[in-house]
Length: 269
Image (cartoon, rainbow, N blue to C red; front, side):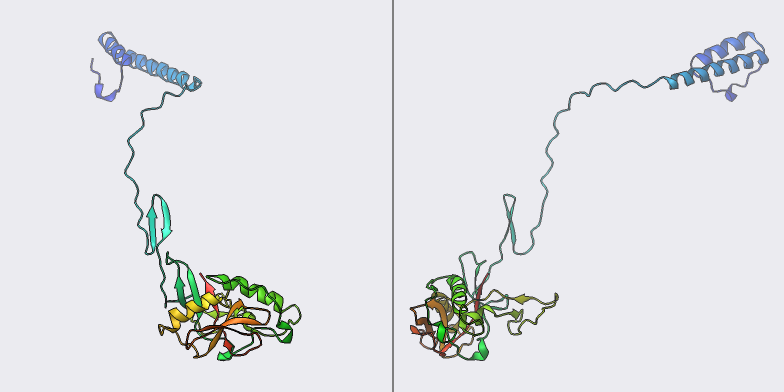
């Protein structure tokens, strides 16, 4: 009896069964036993597959915490610093720098905030009254002085000077209505297209701001001013306000009706 063993792939118990059968049976009987065995194996596998899966067991305890990986890195761009996870700007400005439609004439100790002057005089370089017509000789309470004080002064002046006359033009209103494009020369069109940047928020400087303007720009030859008088927003009395002679630097009180004073608008950043 010869059995071609390489034609069969029998595993485990089936192999033992085949060897037993091969020793005492002919080929036909052996194949019958093998077919019966494989049929039983198939039935058993089907039964195993039909057994429903039980509920999952409880989650095992967490493993030990792994080592901390290396810290990530971030390269800050120009003008940016990162310290203790805090991102800050390090950009600083300086006097004489062209910025936001004007020229910087004062910066604080951080170099990130300060005051800007318009590049040119307003009102076509002509003088203008501080008051708004004959009814403008009144107390406006615009007595503040110092850094940024001109902004509140300007609002007070406009509020008081337009109660009786809404159509007039005067120094504070002229400064507040100033609008300029990024070149510091071209007035902003109305409406201003999205592609252009229009700078507003200007005001008439306080007496102190006007002095800074004279000392830091005029005396240093950084910007051109008329060899004449310039109005401040700081009120002196019912009928007078402070103006400065940009030829001598002298600060003096003058009648609000005077047209000697020129207007140079300023803004803050």
